[in-house]
Image (tube, rainbow, N blue to C red; front, side, top):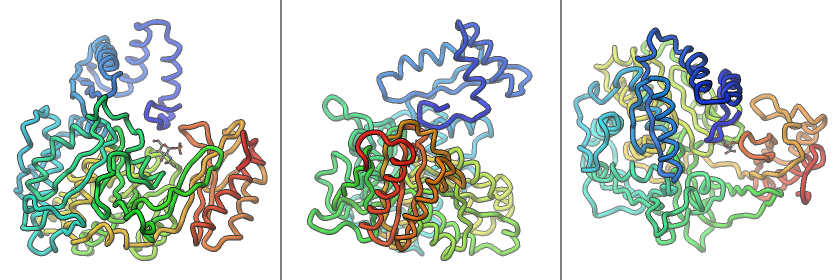
Length: 525
Ligand SMILES: CC(=O)N[C@H]1[C@@H](OP(=O)(O)O)O[C@H](CO)[C@@H](O)[C@@H]1O
């Protein structure tokens, strides 16, 4: 079962959803929710339950808001409207309502720059205060020791806190709900030396279309600058969020005549196993690169703590099979961190990251966050006289603890680049991606393909995995897998190899095996 965002619902909810689908009228729906959903909350009085409701900028929002509110009131529960907000902000507010505020009050006293005139609800204000307060604390405490951030496109704007040069960041908002929230941050970020230039804010004549030729998924899959970036200079610092602002990738447009950034693999998807190259476009810093940037920063902070404080503390980085092999090798061999692989879908990554005390998780498409366990936070709080302990705690406030969040992710990346004095090219040079290729094709019934080992091995149809293994063995540094999409009627193929041409060839060879053995539909790849 898939939710509107395309994510699989928790299995425990599937029987409830089936019961709801069978309800004949509203009363029956209310009864199922009361008995099967809120009953599980194990609360003595349902009046204590408050339901937080947010909405986005789509035309369906007023209708859905009215329906959801009516449903909550029918259950005689308290409804709180959180306004037009991003998905991760709503997660944050629910978490805060349950666990009490983890606002910037336990910081080192740095105060967040005040927000602009745009009124935020008190709950939302807590969100902004928390992440901005943490940013200021982390940027300020070592401002004198760290090199100034040197953006490839420096501005003459306000000087950053601590005297660093300002960074101009072009943000592709995917014409989604994140635009308005980032707009609120513009003056506050200007005060700390980040000049946001928002594009695709949904304000173009007629309103830009959500995620159309823009957004994190477009940029990551097509390796092209989004629409609306035609005038952005080559080498500029840019990022792209998606429509509901839970994914983030960074990129830098490359000169039209120049080759694509050496490290960037070209990846294009297309039904029918199209493998056309996008050509030179951008230097991409995807979710893998964000995860590794965070991991490097965290490892450096942890290295400043006494060994005994970290005794038994489990740190891990969670990826999926789509993570570039070079990122996994860097994690294991250079950072000496365990890399865990889960099936595709953030619910799996989130769960695996929760098992560690400090779990960094990101899908390559830019959806992810860093989770700190309660136990680790307590230990750090007890050692708060140590600057690195205070900074790790601040990091746990800067990064949304509930779900991937493009806004707090953006602050995380900007903070680390500033602290390290890195440009995007420096960050890209952390490791060199193996060239890769993604394809997708249609088969008669994609459920005929079943997988194991975090989707890296095909169990059925019989013989497919052996055929993939044979294809892979012909390519140096070759790796490939095929899996049925959870959100589209397609089978996705991923391949990487020593050269782009080989990655393309391997992907096509695997797509052909899938086509032949799993009932391909349409032209053979
Ligand atoms: C290769 C890829 O990007 N897959 C995406 C996509 O899932 P598929 O199961 O591959 O269709 O949508 C999911 C939901 O948004 C996201 O979590 C996942 O990363």
